[in-house]
Image 1 (tube, helix red, strand yellow):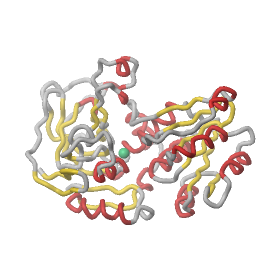
Image 2: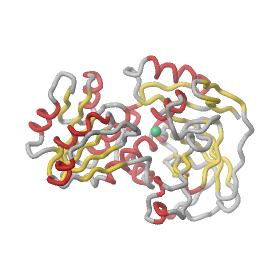
Image 3: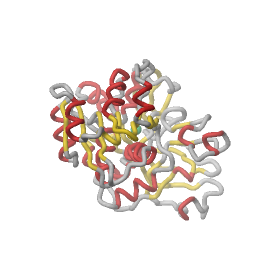
Length: 344
Ligand code: MN
């Protein structure tokens, strides 16, 4: 089979590898679409501290089941589903040990032995990939592959909004109108929350508005703290930081309302200077969110309820042109949103 392979940082190409076969408990997926994520760009650039090389990348992928490994035929999975050859599936890239403390409290996405497809183990930018049956989530056969492949990016948003207990009563300020910020926006709007989005690019803010943001703020030309205060007099109940610049952190604490929550997604190692008093006096919750914790069924249900994830896809390329796709994202980051690779 052919696969998108990062041999070492900055060396990306399409190579021929042996076809995988499904082990016990696994199913073989013929990949039909794979999304390119910011974290794939980091693996490519050598700036993802978690990645190991060489690596078949890709943690956002969907395809068709073409073979069942031992013990998976008729196997009953959570939600009462079982898998058959020909099923269309979106693959959850998170695999966990099931035994450690985080696994024992239902948090497999931060498993002590976490292994993510496309990061710690070979991933989905390949013609075939074997995945544990429990990671294969059936999607309707009439969905375009571009829709099915968006399940993983929206699982990030679902995890953030689940961790922060977002409800229809919330006002959510989202910092950053890139792919993550926009998936959070669309998901919060679907849940009935009011949402505002801040970014420094008017073009992205226009997109945010078209996707349901009731207010947009250009934090380069406007004073974000003042605007946020006008939007929510008591402070903002829920802030999702998808910009992740440590220096912004003190400002988030100031903008949050009493009893507010701040979702934190950064992989930055630089320290942020914060005022502990703000946290105590307002009893703030600062909540980390990473990957997703069994959110695929929820996202598939959202897509069935009318959420249109394809709106975030700006480009698609045959996977054989992966290098061109990565170059486009590198050279025109402002003109690309989600870029998808397609497989025949
Ligand atoms: Mn991703």
